[in-house]
Image (tube, rainbow, N blue to C red; front, side):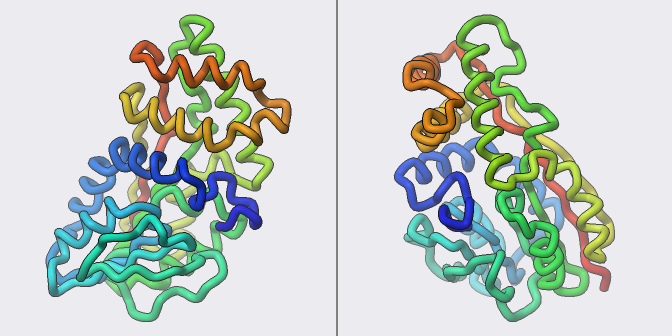
Length: 264
């Protein structure tokens, strides 16, 4: 998932850390609740795929304890500092490298596969890394399910936010992102041989973290939005100014969380 290979939101850029923090604030409670529902407990071996930041590896480590293992992998590991045992950090390109050896009780990937052209094949490899009776949990966006930044378009600030979000979606599509990927996860997990498949969706309508995520994303993509004629410098400046207030209710793309168990 390198920038050269087409990944739009390059995790080597400065704004990536702010995006990770905002994503953690928005989605971590939802993610942790779903992992806990599966019985996550001491001694489990977990693989956190495309970990990005430290929040989910650290949460997994608290639950599996000293008798468990959390393998946190990413193509860019510079944001995964400060983690200690039972967490092991490893550089790994899930699209190109062989899966780590050893069966896992839990394999989890959030907002990773949607960016990969070979997403369906990668999902099958993740499913194969799960031990019999273990779980695969994949969480990914579905921007086409609810494509607006501001569903309640009341005035010029909301209209501008939705205009810039349309530009963001255009850039994603140009990079090969499947804007309707989230809704396909249940069928893909069943196709990979998993059972007990369930899926749920979540998105907040507004929060300070949503505004920070939007601002960090727009700052990161500013040059590309302008270069592709999708927004002007003045429009981006005004949108960022609007986001610094508390009146703009901006949301994220829906996150679809899907889980399935490998038959024993």
